[in-house]
Image 1 (tube, each protein chain N blue to C red):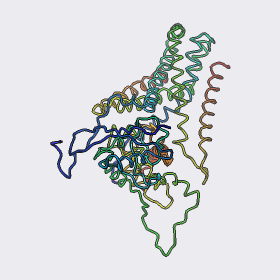
Image 2: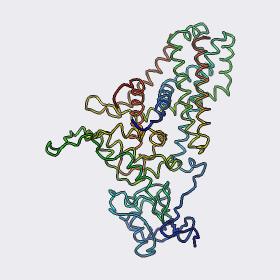
Image 3: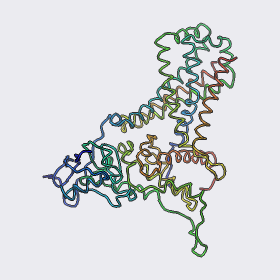
Image 4: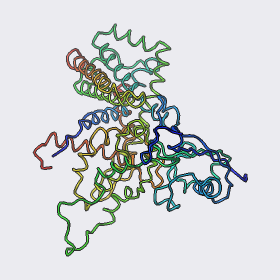
Length: 136
Length: 247
Length: 118
């Protein structure tokens, strides 16, 4: 018998939420993984900043930076960074049509158009960087 | 197809116990049965004390939402056969306090829904003599998807944020607010923004997206919320940069 | 006017902008600036050429924008991940100060490097 029970004021039950709630369901784990890509985005931003800083420190310092990039552990790690950054890119761009619902006059622009526009921008940016850093 | 399937049903009788318990029932399997039919069989033949909500039994009233094997579903729309060989675990919708057995307390949702004013709000109601409000198919298409919500609360059960932060206004409330924001007859978009552009409004949402995945009516509340974040942000910037505009 | 609306829209705008620019630019830059030289696939621009490219005003602007927006994207997203993922609600103010604080300090460092030192 539940001693705390009061007639007409039932004791409602609330479940405790475990700390690792996000491991219990695949969809939640995928979500947290997606969110943690932001850490790699921050890493990319900081590495870029460091690279620019090395440019300011002169050719020897920059050469040391390049040598560091060539270290197998470092270049291996950067491949992982690239994979995670691509995961961020794909998940981000795929969700763009959900947030960006636009109209031309009265007609709604189809989701696929928004999606293609975003991937087009990705290709355009990539092509631009290739041209600037490799092509010239 | 086996003859019977085992149902493991969560029971909670507050006058008897302080925490939920499980009770097992053997239910016959029929080809066209839904989980709701199995529960009705339990109530009719095995254990009349089992308490749960249901009404239309055809997926339009939103009453029979429960967790089946950990997923929020409408029990009237979930085939028993698809879940064989079982056992099936049936629990009340996650995220809501349990009143009894499979019945959750939905008061919180109802209060939140009311707070977003889910009705047409106009400064001046059009007098009957002037006739009906006319709406083109394109204007209807703007909000129709969000009007399909049957308040079944599956989205709240799927949303991890609602479970973690019960003050979160939740997917259905925002989708229904959008239904009216986008209705050409309504004039209360700014009023709703006061309620929605708060931390416990749209900003607690981190676009997990599970709400849209479980919605039986394809309302896509996640999409409604993300669109609203864009709207609210644009509104914030314009009101910051051009504060002289009238509200 | 009534209720004071949240200031979240501003932070969300930074998060959103950062998410977009990092999504569009970081993979290609990772490949060209870090992996390709690291793997020896290409020598890349000479120090002199790179230095000249870096000092171009458009490059400075782009690099500044990419870094600062990406940092604020991380700050906002990481804040929510800690808040919800580890249920650290009681530390909300602290987490906000630390994440946005780090992003702000590093953004200031970026300004200094990109506009003054470079």
